[in-house]
Length: 536
Image (spheres, rainbow, N blue to C red):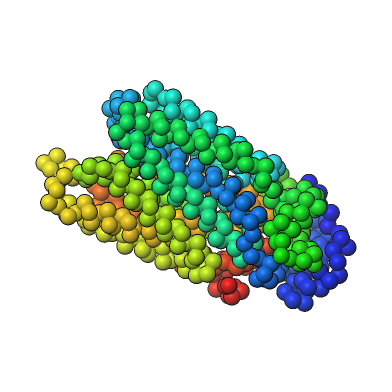
């Protein structure tokens, strides 16, 4: 890869605007590693790296139809993510009519096959996108969603079902890594958090749709095949809509395709004049300069070393991976994957319907997150989210403790008990607080990394998420049996409190900062004490 870095391509007025109005220093960085301040082993030192600030003209950053269109098409992957991971909750209720009585272990195998596929799909997709671009991988994910849905609908055994779930999981993992990265790179900085959260809104909408379809087909013979197979329809819509999606302008700059990158920026900022567009292009070029020297001269292994050995990259990786781990280890799979099974054991006649209520709460409060993620800020939102989740889990543990049991220690279905209703209420508290922060902010991971390691860094963070997801999905039913529901939810509450401490000590505020500015936070420490620009 090579990039033409001549500042002479931009007007003096554009550079003056950057320097005078935003105090941006755009001194040229030489294309040689030595002149750019490269350290040993091809890594870039912090010396010689310019401070970068993004122009904050409010008129320029208005939401446009073009931005809405590209985010909507990309976020169909989020809809499929939510649908395919939640449809199994309703399918497990009547799948036994065709596949026979399933043990807890077989249910865990079917459910966790998607998670295993997502782990594999997410592990390499981010790094691969550095070579192929972001857009092609979204198309591959759509094809995987279609293939996996068809395979599930035709399954006749547990193992064929696991295969279909694995294929769908490959698409889920790939989409969960690439789509937030893609939207984050295309979105204006003051709207970036909300635009990435749109993908999370679509995930929760997919979950709601999955439960609604589950309710429609729950009493239909073979209805589970419809629940799982209908996921192919939105995937087909996305596959045929990819023509409207542009490539990420930052990736285009890495490929020396500056004219195409500028054309994308003109569409994203139609209210900006030529000087403003050139200013933003220059800002991106400055970020590309900081990353290109290392990217040109390093192998994949050297990029991994850069992630682990360079302080700013390592701190970004710790935060990104930590947030993704806590998202899953706090037990959200209990509400999304197994809610219908759990509510059926509590005696609810329409367990899928109750699960749909939980999914609706998740969707509604993810809409609340659209307002909070940029205005309140990532850090504060996460602290509120984790404390509320811990409260809901503690309440669930308490209500399960006082739930009447039968002689075999299983929950009683005594209709006179208020405990089942209180358990649902506590779960709604837990899911609602999850939705406003923990459910979406970890997916802002792409903003943490410098451009040359952004794909690899997001791959590792996404793989961390799905590894922890796999652990919870594969053990939850067994954990309920061994530790009792009260013990399981207390364990998840403790993990929430550990996550709260992690965010308090290590997670800085990134709202309102450009992707290039976020990297500056991690130069000397985790940046928690640094005062960022006032939020809009």
